Image (cartoon, rainbow, N blue to C red):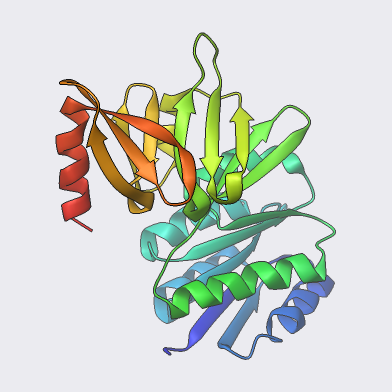
Length: 241
C-alpha cells in the first residue's frame, strides 16, 4: 500500500505530543506531521499531501481556526479526510461543511480516536472514502456513518426525516430532506420528493405503477419510492460509478 501520511494541527504542545504518540501506534501510518501553526500546516498539505488531518478547531493564537484551515486544506487536497477535536460541541454542525470522518469533544478517549484513525487507514488501503453525517439534534450530536445508510424518508406532515441504516437501525432527525441532501456525499441520489437513496445499497428496482417504482435493499424489508422521472437520473448516476 502507498504510505499513509497524517497531519496534526494542535496548538497545545502537550496535546500535540500526546496525539502524535497515539496515532503512531498504527504501523500503517508512515509519516506524522505535527504543528500548531496554520501556515505550516497548509504548507505541509501542499507539499506532502497527507491523507488524514487531525485538527483542533480552537486555535486562539492563529489568524483562522481549525475549521477554516480545513476548508483551505480541502481545496488544496480534496481527498483529505478530517477528524476534528474540540473543547466545545457547538462546532459540530458547522464542521459538516468539510464532511469530516469524525468529531471528538475533548478530552479525547484513546480507544475511540485510535479506532477512527484505524478505520480511515483501512479505507485508504481499500481506496474508499466513508464519512459521517453529523447532526446537531436536541440534547445530542449524532454521528451517522454514511456508508451504512440505506435511504432517507420524509415523515409526512412533519419537519422530520427517518434515516434507515443497515442492521435495522433507524434515526428520526429534525431536518428537512433538502437540508440533508446538501450534507450527503455523491453516493446519494434523490429518488422521489420524499426519498433519498444510497445508490450503492440498492438490490433491485421494481415498477409498482406507471409513475412509481420501489427500490429494494439487501436484508431489509422496507422499500423506498422512486418516481418515473427520477428513475432516469438514478440510472445515469449508477452508470457513472
